Length: 134
Image 1: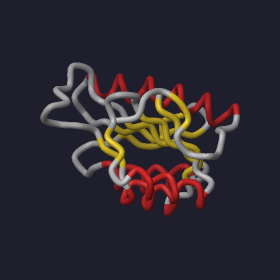
Image 2: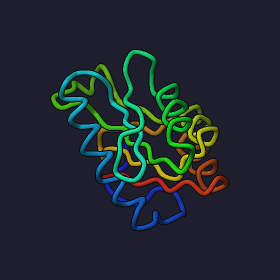
Image 3: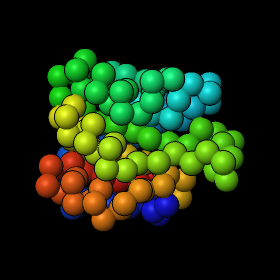
């Protein structure tokens, strides 16, 4: 679980940073309703919210609705017991983001597991996806 800061090589643009902050806030609020852990945003508008279908399907749907250039936010739900249910991002997540033409990913620092971190970073760098932990 990475600490706060930049994870992939590309630095997000100012508009991507704004979407990351907005998406992070929206994901925390959706999580507080016990709906999901992922929100897809574009231009400060929510494109998709994760429910029972899971993260990857949410990302694909958000990419279709946003027509690419989306930002993905993945967080822990408030009061989530990280011993049993850890939000995670891995190569499959990045593959969905690449398919959806996502530009950036924000995860919750200290509360999101990066599965196969080296491969995730490689995929992000090769695809120009910015990754930040907040």
